[in-house]
Image (tube, rainbow, N blue to C red; front, top):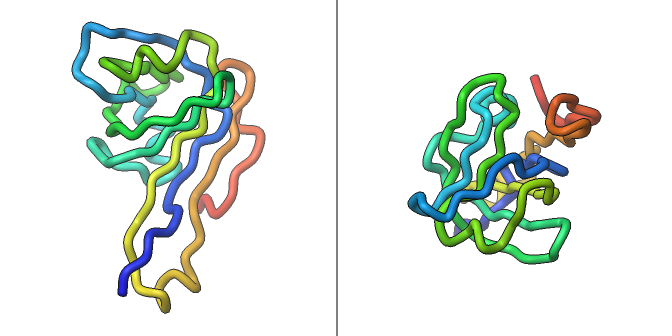
Amino acid sequence: MLIEILKSKILRAETTDSRMDYEGSLAIDQDLMDIVGMLPYEKILVGNITNGKRFETYAIPAERGSKTFSVRGAAAHLGNVGDLLVIMSFAQMTEDEAKNAKPKTITLAERNTKIVKSTNID
């Protein structure tokens, strides 16, 4: 039996852009994706801390160092510039694998320019 376990999390990411005229996705600074091990086009669950809404989409890489978090397509109706997000990706694994799994997480501040907390980052 496989179960889903948290693999990656970016907490308190501030939305920098919201574009309805784009196919659904969330553009994330590639450097930040790399830190938590999130892959381009990986399925993600996004919770909007500001308004309480949640949605699933996929991550696309934004320019390295840009600190971008751009909500796009239909998901743009669920968030505005300045909203705080929690972005999570999951992995399927056996129960034995899950017992030793440790998610890579970062918590951001200061308009995505500062990592104030990290867990399981090499």
